[in-house]
Image (cartoon, rainbow, N blue to C red; front, top):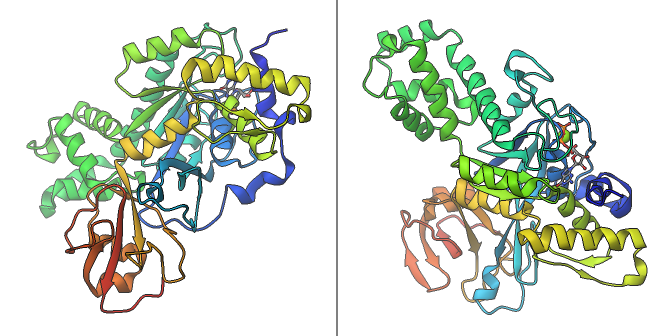
Length: 439
Ligand SMILES: Nc1nc2c(ncn2[C@@H]2O[C@H](COP(=O)(O)OP(=O)(O)OP(=O)(O)O)[C@@H](O)[C@H]2O)c(=O)[nH]1
Ligand SMILES: [Mg+2]
C-alpha cells in the first residue's frame, strides 16, 4: 500500500466530508471593511491550489489528480489567525461580528482567489492560456503554490515523487507572469509614450493609471521604474529591453510567497531545501491535503483542531473508522511532527501580515467596556495597512464619522490621539465625531 496517498485521497472526497458545510461557510458572507486586499493562489496545474483554497475557505470546489480541473477562478473567504486583543485586555471573551474567536485566537476574514492552473507557454495560449492571469490581476499578493515533492511534470501529469524540479517550476512560472505583464505594457505602447511625452503628464501617474487594472499601485510603479533604471530616461526613448525590465520590476513589486505543497510526500524535503536555497521568496512547507482533512474532521466533530495548530486531539476514537485513524496518524507523523503544522495558516498569515504589511485594529464605542453601541465586546477586528491613520479608520467605520471626525481615543491608554495618529497593531480605538454614529 502506498501510504502517502491516504491524505490526498481523503482530501478529495469521502472520508471527512461533511455535506452540510458547503458554500455558506466560506463564499459570500459579510462584506469586509475596506480596504480589501486579495491573495491569489497561482501555480502549475495539479499542484493543490484548489485543495489549499478548499482547506482555507471550506468551500466545495472540484479537486482531482489530473491537469486543468479548475476552469474558472473562485473567490472565497479565508482567515488570518492572531492572538485576540481580548486576552491582552484580560477579558473573558469577545463577540466577533465576522470571523470567530476560539481559545483566544481571533480568525479575521480575508479574501482568497483560486485560479485555473498553468503550464509553460500559457501566455501564448497553451493549456488554459491566460485565464489564470485575468484572475491574478486582481490579487494584491501572490501565493505561488508549488509541488515541492516533484510528483507532477511541467504539464501537471502525475510522475513519481522527486522527478520534477520545483525550482524549475518557479522559474517558468515567474517567466509566464512576466511575459503577461510585458504584453500588457507593449500593447499600443508607442502611442501611449508619445501622448505622455507631448502632454507632459507625470510618467509614474500615467503608468499607474495604465496598469491600475492589475492591482498595481503607485509605489509598485515607482519601485519598478527604479529597478529598470528608467526614472530619468525620457519615455519616448525606452527600448523594448527597457520595457522588459519594467515588466520584471513590476512582477517583483507584487509580493509573492511560496507554498511548498505536498510536503507530506517523499521527495518534498529535498525540494523544499532547493527552493529555500535557490530563491529569495519566503518558502513555507505546506500540506493542503492534510489541512483539508483536519478541518473537515474538526467540522464533523471527530477531532479538536484549529487551523495553524501544531497538533490535534481525537474526541472519541470509537467514532472513527480504522482508515480514518490511520489517516490522522499519517498526518501527525508526516506533516505536523515533521513541519510543525500543515503550513496553510502560516502562508495566509505571512501573506497578509508580512507581504501586505497589514495590522489589526479594533474600533469600539465604549472605552471602558471595549464594546460597540449594542454592548458587543470587540465586535470588529479590522485588517488595515500599516500607516493607516485614525481619521482613515473613522472613514472605514462610517463615512459620517470620517467627515466630522474630531479626535480619537486609544482605549488601552485612555489617551486622546489626533487625526494623523498612525494606528498600531492591536490598537483599540474610539472615534469621536460631530455626527453621531450608531455602530
Ligand atoms: N499528497 C498530497 N496531495 C495533495 C496535496 N494537495 C493537493 N494534493 C492532491 O493533488 C491533486 C491536485 O489537487 P488540486 O487542488 O485539484 O490541484 P490544482 O492545483 O487546483 O489543479 P488544477 O485546478 O487542475 O490546476 C489532488 O489529487 C489533490 O488531492 C498535498 O498537500 N499532499
Ligand atoms: Mg484547481
